[in-house]
Every structure is written in C-alpha cells, then in structure tokens.
Image (cartoon, rainbow, N blue to C red; front, top):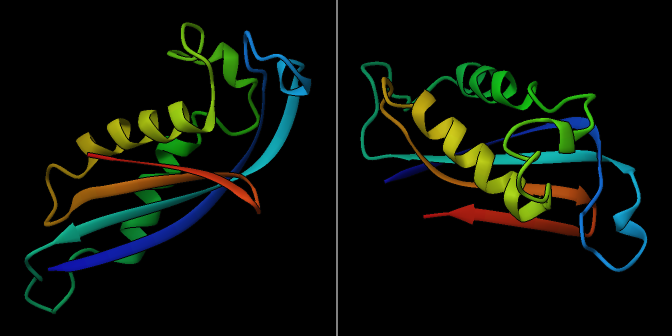
Amino acid sequence: MYKLKIITDFDAAHQLRGYKGKCENIHGHNWKVEVEVFSEYLNDIGIAIDFKELKSITEKVVSKLDHTFINEVYPFTQINPSSENIAKWLYHELKDQFRETLVRIHSVTVWESENASATYFE
C-alpha cells in the first residue's frame, strides 16, 4: 500500500456561531491543508498519481474557500465553519474527484494555525 501527501494553503475568514469567546467574532486564518491519498497500485511508470495532479485537484476544491468569508459558503451557511467541519467538507469534496484515478482519499488535515489542526478520515 502507498500513501502520498500534498500540502496547500488558503486565506479566509470565519466566525464560530455560538462560541463563547473571541472566535465568535469574525477573524481570519492562513489555513494549511494536508491531503493524504492511498493506493494499492502504481501505473506503468511506477507512480500512483502525479503530485502535480494531486495538488491541482486539491487546489481546485480549496479555491472555493480562498479569500472568502467561509460562513457565506455552503454548507457553512448552515453549519459552523470549524476546522473539523472544514476538514470533513474538503474530504467529501475531494473523494469524488479521485474516482477516476488509482488513488483513494485517506484523510484531510486542516491547520488554522501552526499549533492547531483537525483531521477527518473514514
């Protein structure tokens, strides 16, 4: 089994509804996103997926959040844009993107600071 990882980032603001503290106010982060995929197989040149393709697919999804107020992006109009919920949303958005490849999504980790992250996997 092979596991590959890419890291990308985006900038966005959010606020946590119902949170009792500073994070209830609108504030921004320089988010970092780690995407891990796995594969049992390699193609005829010995790779599971080109890292450029993996990063391109990820950045296409992440761009939906870049330079936004995340609370205004569906489904975060309905659910809190916590790191946990963002990681889960990215996971499911990416899961569909890999259907035509040799890889399957393993996990998504969202970092809202260098010391705080949330990971979603199934």
